[in-house]
Amino acid sequence: MNGKKRADIKQGIKVRIVLKQDQRSGKLTDGVVKDILTNSPSHPHGIKVRLVGGAVGRVQEIV
Image (cartoon, rainbow, N blue to C red):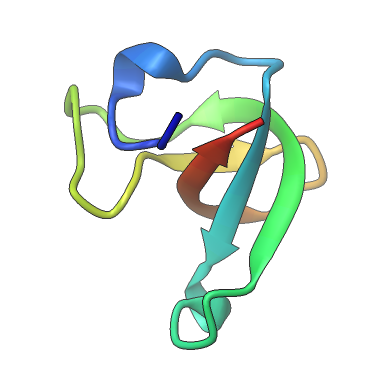
C-alpha cells in the first residue's frame, strides 16, 4: 500500500518514509507513526508524518 491516502495511515503503524534531505536519492527510513501532519485527505507525494524517533517525512510505503 502506498502512503498517498490519509485514511490508510494510523498512529502506531510501521511505515517507510522519505526524509526531505533524501528526496533526491529516494532513500527510505523505517519507523512507527507518532503524528500525522498532513490535514488533507490525500497528497500526491505522500502523507507527511512524524515518526516515534522524531524524523519527519512523507510516507512512501505502509509495511
